Image (tube, protein in one colour):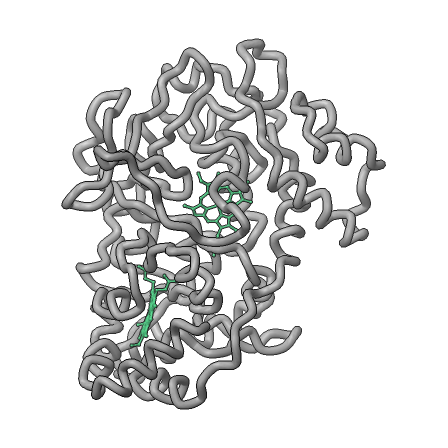
Length: 387
Ligand code: HEC
Ligand code: HEC
């Protein structure tokens, strides 16, 4: 199979891939093992030889999926003394109001590039939040807004994928017909903007934008670089054959789908009751039905407008910059234990802060939370922190 011929790294995973006969995708276990190896694999920057059919770039953020998804968990973001972001797990997205990419930089700032070619630049955090820094190709387009997104934990995603579309479509209430102040639109399932319908699409997007490698879903061999000089730089692909085959995408998606959900201690019933009472559960649905049984992710997977306080700047086509997928709350205790920040860009250190940022459709729930007595508040927060 083509994965072997494309490999120049000598990692164990590669030996495994090349030793194996072409895996039958029906063999689920084998698919997951190979998918895990591909997820962990450090790809190699495209060589200058245009014949070589592999390679990161010309622009990329990291060399492996696992670089940003270490331990499949969420982590705090490290910066240097001047506020320059050192971690790959934070990606600075770019778009205009309608989700169109920046004319020179594309959909995100890539912080790495093939030898001899300049990366887009760096990301800096200051008083105004995350912003591009030391840009290589001139200023951003006039209409371009930038906004940070953090790598989410990748546990239990197969369970979210298993929730049928019609269940999600039926929960959506885009015009708020029931007048409860909470609407919610069904867009997709994955990414903070729910812009990817399934794991294979999210994987293809990651290969294209984070690693600079093409797939049939994202065929441009140069990845995320609209700039002419960038398109002419080594990228390892050609227009006809994607660098990453559909088979590789399916193996990685099969691996991700099989990762079990995070485990939590038994939830406190009184905290759970308060959570429902103040209206958190209107979006953070405790369990969604699926053919394999209830999915206790505390999300309805819909996108909601959380108001100007959570305007993410950059967005995706058809999704407002203030709209976000209801964050699944399962695994929250794990994120907190790692010291990871909450919300799409990690701006909230604690659950109370995350709640304080809820506006728009969540304004009523936030107000109801704030009206609780201190003891009830603590009970509700303790419940969420334990998930
Ligand atoms: C440079 C860092 C980086 C790399 C490399 C990276 N990711 Fe991600 N990943 C992210 C960020 C940031 C997000 C959130 C993106 C968004 O919301 O638009 C994300 C989101 C995801 C999600 C959606 C999770 C959810 O809860 O909806 C999946 C699945 C995923 N990545 C898989 C992958 C795979 C597979 C690869 C390798 C092909 C990969 N990622 C490489 C940073 C990265
Ligand atoms: C109208 C829908 C809605 C309601 C109501 C709502 N939330 Fe959220 N919540 C969201 C969305 C959407 C996000 C993701 C926002 C982001 O990433 O910036 C979120 C994120 C969070 C997060 C951060 C999770 C993480 O993993 O980073 C916490 C904690 C949270 N909500 C708790 C609550 C609590 C507690 C309540 C009730 C007081 C509540 N929410 C009510 C939609 C809602």
